Structure formats: C-alpha cells, structure tokens
Image 1 (cartoon, rainbow, N blue to C red):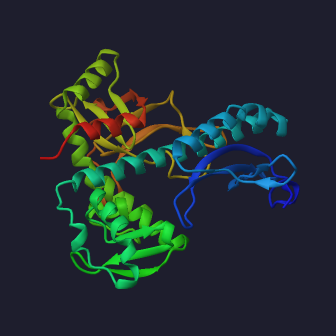
Image 2: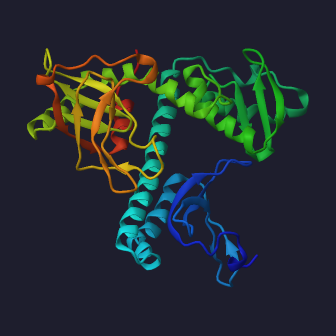
Image 3: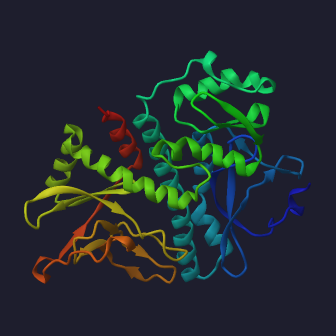
Length: 352
C-alpha cells in the first residue's frame, strides 16, 4: 500500500521509540508518536517510504539496533514540533509530553531488563534436567533440544515458546511437557513474560502491571544488600561529598536519612509517571519530605506547565506514613543516574 494511503499518515510524527512486537517471535519495531488535531499524542505503527512511495516497516532483532534508529530520528524533535505548531506555549507543552513519553518508555524497558536478569540469577542454583529425561509427546519430539536450551538458562519455566515451530509447550510435571497451543500474540506475550514472572513465583499470564509491582516488593530487600558493596559505598560517598542526599537509579532511590542515626536507606521511586498523561520528570526540582514514607515521588511538570513538588509517601496498602516533626522537614535535591548502573550493580552481587 502507498504510504500516503496508510491510516494516520496525515498526523505528524514527532518521535519514535522501540516496542516489542508479540506475534510469532519477539522482534522489535518502531512506533511513531503522532500528533492529532485536538493536541492528543498517541503511539501508532511507524511506516516510512521504501523509495517508491510505498509503506514499509523496520524490524529489528535487538533493542540496541532499534534504539539506535530511534535516537537518530529523535534528534529532530524540537524542529518537528516547531514546524507543526506555531504557538510557543503549545510547542513547550507538546515537547514536555513527548519527553515524558520517551522517558517513560526507556524507564519501563530498563526496569524490565533488570527484573529479567535478576529472575535468572536468583534461580541459577536450580538443577537443569538432562535432555534425555525430558518427556514430550512423540509428535513434538523435535522440540526436545530447543526446550533443553531454554531450561538451561531458566530451569524454572512452566511455559515455553518456539517461534520457529509456531508452538507453545506447558510443563505438567518435573520433566514432562505437553503441547499447549499454536503461538499467537497473546501466547507469545505470556511466554516472553514467563521468563521474568516465573522467576519470582508468578505467571506470565498474570496481569503484567500487578506482576511488576509484586516483583518490586521482592527486589527492595535485594537493593538494600547493595549498600554493603564497596562500589556502592563509593558512589554514595561521592554523592555526599557533592552535597547530594538522594540518588535515583532505576526504580530505586538511595536516600541519606539524617533523622536518628545518619545512614543511607533504599526507597522505591514512583508516582512521577503513573499519574495523569503528559507528566514528565522535572530534573531541577526538589523533594520535600514531611514523613518517613518508603516511596519517593519525584517532582514533575504537568501539561499546563504546573510544577509539582516532589514528596515522600507510603503505598495504599502500607497505611499512613510516619510523620516527621515540622522542625525535621527536609527539602532535598536529587540526582538521577543511568538505569544501566543498577543492572550492573545487581550483577556484581551474587546470592549465596
């Protein structure tokens, strides 16, 4: 089909970002952040001209390849916004929305990669079944070797996908597997998420948002162990020497608590991108802590330009956070470090 005949073609593309495509395999493709006449932004499939006026999509086997293509396109975001919007206020508001959408996507991807790596690491001690011990129905015995390879990486799997064969297997006993069905988008997605979810005792079929919330709860004690690492102590000491008391790495916040015994503690970050559409991190903001809540909401800017003060709180099921005395309220700047650093730190700390 010609590019100018594709749905949403007339809506300007302001940015692109990699997304997983769950069909038969788990390849990456680009989605376009489109601007619609009412000012609404939405992600749509990205197409480009193949050289003869026809629509073409780009498919990437790795996130790094897809991200490289996205970065190249996104260098022109400000020029694109200026070109399609004449009102300076609308330009500023739209750029904030675009930055929020891109930041949110990268943050989600980094966090999910950390969760996957940690799922594999925390189950590394489990025995791997011998390939000859795997019990498969005779009609699918050719999947024995690829199944063995998956179980060598993640022996805890209860669900396994085989895109080359368009098939999904389900474990029914310790070494016994059965054919679960032909791969479609839903099964492919569940199999992919199984690698992470099952490593924490959850299922790839479970609600993904709730699954990740439970995983964060399980990872918080793990993050606390990072405080014992010499490399982490050095990072925190360097931060203190620069006057910093709050470091944000991925979904965790290293917080220097001076109320009582001065010490570094680990809190969860949250709230800055889970509220209304269009919020974006305000890196120059501060956090006003009136309580000892375990969640740090980073300051952000709303679509209308309103700046929301960062603060601390508890999650809904934690109960009300223990308040600080008004004399002990603290207003703190913060620094955001590369999310890849947390993945590296997790990789250095081995389970006993």
